[in-house]
Length: 157
Length: 112
Length: 91
Image 1 (spheres, rainbow over the protein chains, first blue to last red):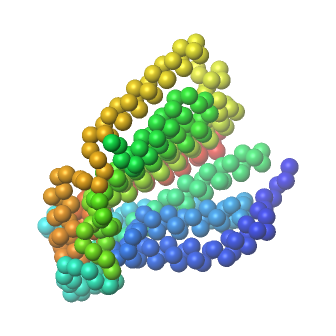
Image 2: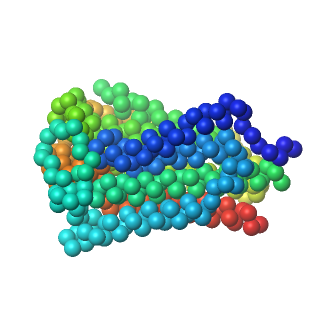
Image 3: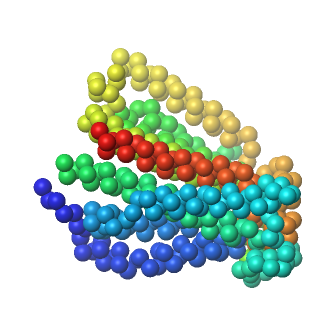
């Protein structure tokens, strides 16, 4: 039995080429979630695609270099930050947007109508996008990593 | 007269339902569940479509006639929940294969 | 036995598709009714939440509770997959 799984040179080269653009595009989609289509969920899924591609191209050795506990901690951290941000506006209501129109961080005042899009608007929405993006990225990576590790172990028995 | 979006949703949902009823492979049943979910998502999005509207995003919008945003937000929720359900079902399928060595629902060991 | 199950399945599918077609024929696409809530979101969402993307403002602000449940479902699914495979590995 072939103990060392290795993808073909085509897959590995495409993985090398696509690694940086996938991560950068995922971060772009997460950070611009309140201005352009996308958001935390879509960006997290794009970044998790990088993990899936990594596992496909580098196999067992690549899976050994990814830490399962790190993804677990990141996932819990994202969900915790999301809930804490929701609770910070509890003086009015749960999920109250307390940072909008304040003039400080992410608090630029905008009026109704078409505009070119300013990054420092939206109040807590960009922060929640980042938290949810972290959570989705870690959850999908954890699921893919678990399935991959188990199927590989099964084959090598 | 039925609209083309609703016709596509009907085709997706009925395809998924017939595959889930008639096929005997567990992986195909999971795929059928996902196809049913896709049909439901298409139905939700097309319910909120307003003729001639654009996506509800103000960044460099060409006009102010926009489709309904709430159905799109709930479709986003539906997509993620569909993904979670399918991931859990697939892990159960992998576990079943490890225990019984088969994916056929008609095999005797899996029916009991 | 097999014939019986096939007849039942075909009956179920035909009935379900018939109900789907009948239900979808009630309204044409592209002309939604009862749009007061969505018109409110489109008109005031940009000023109230500061977000150009109205879908994002609905997901994270007006209907944040739904998103909390959604994130919890994803967390639960990841934990479930983790638990299933850990049980497999320990046997």
